[in-house]
Length: 193
Image (cartoon, rainbow, N blue to C red):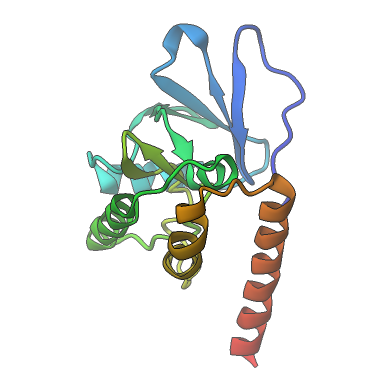
C-alpha cells in the first residue's frame, strides 16, 4: 500500500507526517495533541481505537483522547524518531531500547501483537523510548522488525556509529530500509515454501 498523500489542509493546520493509512495533523493552538486522519478507503481506524483501549495509560504509548468516523485525537509526543537520530547523529541510549522492550511486553500482556515497530515508529522523548504508531498491533502475524532493529543497534550502531558520532545521509538510510524490506519479503516467501 502506498503512503497517504495530502493535497491540502485548512489554515493553520500542518501535516506532521503520513503513513500507509493516515496523515497526522497538528494545529498551532493545540500543540499537545495531534489528529490522525484516515484517508478515504483506508482501513484501521476502529482497530486502532481498540488498541488504545487495551493499552490504557502507559508512559511509552500515546493516548487516544477521542475519535470520529475517520480520525483519532491523540496525545502528541515531542521527540526525535530513531531514524532521525541516526540521520542527525543524535545518540540513542540503551535505555530507549529497554523502554521499548518493556512497552512491547506490556502490550503483549494486554492481548496485543506488536507489529511494524521500526525506527520511524519509535521516538526518543526526554531520553526515554516511546512507540508512536500502534495501528498494526492487532495484526495476527509474526513481525521481526523490532528484533532486527535491536540486532542492528547492538551489532552495528553501538560499536561503530555511536562512538564515532557519524551522521548517516537519508540516501544511505533509505537504501538500508529498502534492502531490509526486500530481504523480509524474501524471508517471508522462503518460509511459505
